[in-house]
Image (cartoon, rainbow over all chains, first blue to last red; front, side, top):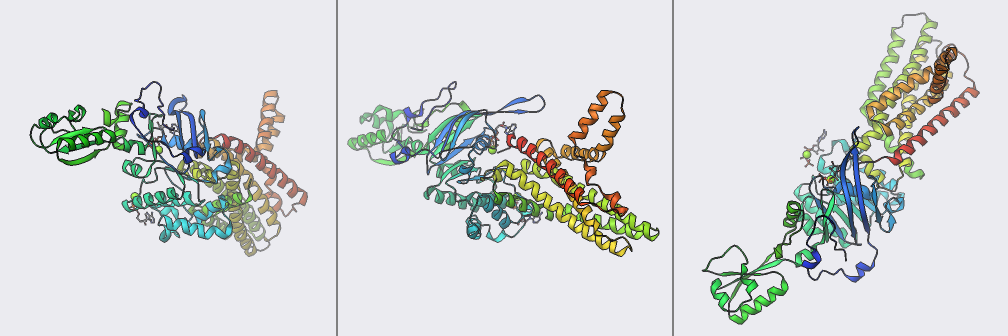
Length: 349
Length: 258
Ligand SMILES: Nc1ncnc2c1ncn2[C@@H]1O[C@H](COP(=O)(O)OP(=O)(O)OP(=O)(O)O)[C@@H](O)[C@H]1O
Ligand SMILES: Nc1ncnc2c1ncn2[C@@H]1O[C@H](COP(=O)(O)OP(=O)(O)OP(=O)(O)O)[C@@H](O)[C@H]1O
Ligand SMILES: [Mg+2]
Ligand SMILES: [Mg+2]
């Protein structure tokens, strides 16, 4: 199981205890993960005084082949530092990183990885096409294929019309798109993207989301950091939330969705519902309406309870007007993690 | 080391620097300087030829130095700070390959610049009666060697200090390198052993750039012998190789921003 409660001195409610039924398919679990990070720790030292600055501390997670893993966290949480360590740009004090079965310092592994930095910036005086051709050479793309590869990548990110212009004259979003093109150039098995959606216009964001979905369907593993929670919710299979350099939550999103609570609205008032012999946990209020009159809001904490409640309503002859999922949204979870430093699960709170 | 990687990096660097506006400014400046020397010097025919030769060759070294220092000191550093380097090193490219590629690219730019300036220079000497000589080509070659060494110096400094410091240190090495012979001779005349040792250390720690300076000989019409050219080539190559190895060692340990 990938589920971990990671911080010793900050007690978390063990997520496993809260969430039912989120087993990883056996076929995936059997394969070695595309990325494994163990106990990654990095402290920066800056200035003449060599003042210590926390980068990340004891971060461990792993990402299975074909999965999308998203790193979330406040500004300065350590997302970029973690990603920098993966690519051997930042040198950790401690920890082990395995990329596609190789040590992360192994150069051969990097031919199978695509990377988009947080601030894509290239040369000022090359054109977009020249830049991608340059990267093709660095990736040892056969010369015959070079043109097709470059065209393919440019088309995928919608930069074909501007490919002949100098990079120094590109706008932020154009650079971001070219950065993505550059990451896709080597037909990577593992994509590492630091804030891929930043700087993109709404169309661009949607295009990139679709593109990443496509790549995922083709079996590409994607690790991304992002501040755009809805995008992450749509794309990711698992999220890791960093807070002040520590991974405070590492959770599969499927599991989060399964754990959502429901609100059942039934005809008749709450008092009447109680008399009908509904289970007492359902009466604690599915929402803010504590009205004695009008439809009763009943609560079910998970799918099992929902089934029981609906059966009970049926048996009591209470017409059910509506069933609404009360999802513990990722955004909600994220905010909670940062307010309390612990995860309090919405469904049981 | 993969040849294709180094070639690609060198070509990329060459394109980038040749298209930089600084490069053209220097080229134009050089041309104006050479031309004004020829036009303005109100001297007798023979003396004018000597002045054109002397000033022209000196101008080539100085302009080359300016470009190497200003483009070179920012080159590696700027890529580190702006993050260009991260996408390159995230490809299967080694850090030593990267440095070598950058070095060769900038050297190529220098060669191109010297070729252009040399061409202008030869044209100019054709116009001054009695000035033209193919011996100049040997002087151009030695200038190229000198700039290639300076280029390695600037690459070395830009892996360890900020661009401004790298530029200052490199200019310092240029000055000391041209004086190093004199510094040692000065030391030998000193009484105290401290001064003698110090000047010897300085002599061995800086490349002796006077080896590449044949202006005096060329101006006076002396022949620059093949042995000197071979020796200078070996000397320059050793210094460049040594500096690049050092830079590689420093740079492999360096931390970059993700
Ligand atoms: N090269 C460095 N030198 C010193 N401190 C650094 C360096 N790089 C990062 N840090 C510090 O490490 C911490 C984590 O930074 P990091 O860039 O990883 O955050 P992040 O999660 O990517 O934030 P953002 O969402 O703003 O991109 C910050 O406090 C930052 O100031
Ligand atoms: N200095 C410049 N020289 C030439 N063209 C430029 C320059 N600056 C911007 N452009 C071009 O002008 C157009 C508008 O650029 P601008 O940077 O204003 O876009 P933007 O709306 O800010 O885009 P983004 O959302 O990507 O930041 C682009 O095609 C860009 O390439
Ligand atoms: Mg960041
Ligand atoms: Mg803009």
